Image 1 (cartoon, rainbow over the protein chains, first blue to last red):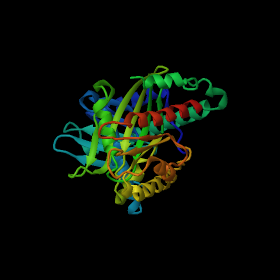
Image 2: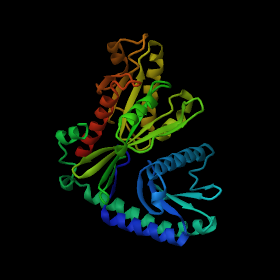
Image 3: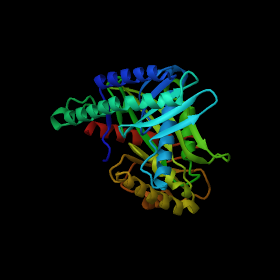
Image 4: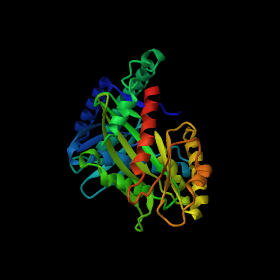
Length: 165
Length: 194
C-alpha cells in the first residue's frame, strides 16, 4: 500500500486547532479549514457553522487535484496557491506540508495581500506539526504497539452491527 | 487513505465507484442517498454536465454509526465513466480505501466493462495500489434489462480475484446496499490488520 493512513492524536489536533485560530485572527478571515488531500477535514476555525464543511472539504480537494493535473500538463510541479474571487467572499487555497490543504474564506474585512502574508507565516508552524504527526505515527506503528490500536480488536460482530439496520 | 482522528474519535474512509459510462454508478449513490436517514448522511454533490453525465465526480458522505467508540464515516465517490475523462478518473482514485466496480450487464457493453476494469488496474497502479490487494466488490448492474449477459459468463470474464459479486438493479435498489457492505467490511478488516 502507498500512503499509510493519516492518524491524528489529541495533542497535534490541539496544536493545529490553535494554529488555525491564530491565523484566522491575524488574517481577519471568516473561516479557515485544514483539509487532507483526499477531501477529509482535519481541523477548522472561525464561522465554521455557516458552511457545509463536508462538501467544502471534498470539493476543495477535487479542485486542488484538478489544478495539480493542470500544472503537470504544462510542466509545473504544482500550483501552490489558488485564489477564487467572489462578489462578497473570496477563497484562498494553499498547500501545507505537501499533504494538506489550507482553505481561507475571507471578505472585505481582510484582503488578499494580508491573507497571503499570514498564510505564509503560519506555514512553517503547521509544517512542523505535520512532521511531528508523522514521526509519532512511525513510532507508534511498530508491531509491539499494534495491539494497543483500538481497531486491532474489531470483531466481525462489530462490523456486522454497523450494517444491522 | 483511512483517516483516524483520535481527537474527534472518527474514522474516515474513501470508497470509489468505478465502471463504464452509463453503467449506474451515480444511480447507486442516489439510491443510497434516498434510503439513508437524514442524520446519517450529508449532502450529495454531483458535478455533472447539463445532460446529467458525471463530469468530475459525485460525492456522498455517509455515517454508519460507531465502532469501538469511533464514528465510522464513509465518503463515497463516483468517477466519470466516459473514456475521455481518464485524467479526472485518475485524480479521484487518490487515497482510495476500497473500490466498487459497477459493470453494465447488457451484452453490448461487455467490451466497455473489460476496458474499464483494465483502466482501473492501470490507474490504481499509478497511485501505487494493486487491484489484487485493494478492498474490492463487483456489481452486475441492470439485471432487469432484456439483453443481459448470463451471470456465469460475466463472472468468468469480469471477476478478478473472487471478489464478492452481486447482481443488481440500481434504479430499484436491488443489490446496492449488499455491494456497499461488502466493500466496507473489507476496509474495516484491513484496518484491523494494520
